[in-house]
Image (tube, rainbow, N blue to C red; front, side, top):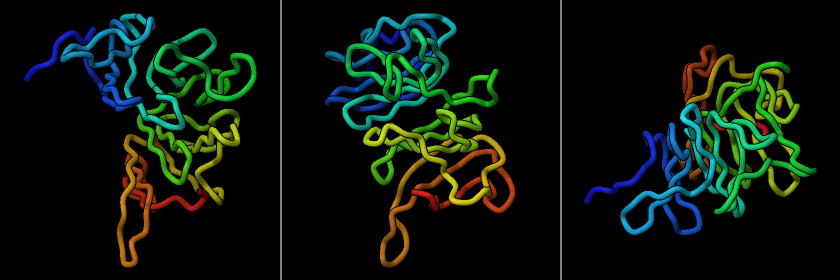
Length: 193
């Protein structure tokens, strides 16, 4: 069975509130599946915008990509109706930055140990130094560096996933990307969780 109606190229999917959402490049950047047809899920519409990663976490659908919603850029949470900034305060966005003048972006998000882990192309998250990988806690309302020591990844993170391995089984966060050095493109586990 085919589905119709997406307003652009589909880049990712996520389940949220028992519904299937599609992150889209061009057109309305967030669609949802209703009766075998993808329909507009938000009013965010711009041919240059896209949502390339989504993850449901603590009653919100977190979306990353290339977009602007008021003061929010490239990373926002969606409540089923509208987007808002991540964090407290009046429309205070917690940005992913490459430098103070350059906005970063997230490629992948995954919930692990009750935090939302974000991997991408950035060196700070909400002002916290955490190159390419950071964790957001909606409980404390803070970003956490992924690193217990100054050792960090040296390039973009493209993929995150979790899985059980070993005996006894241990849950790990797996990080994949274009980084080199001791991790060689895949890093298993994160020490500061």
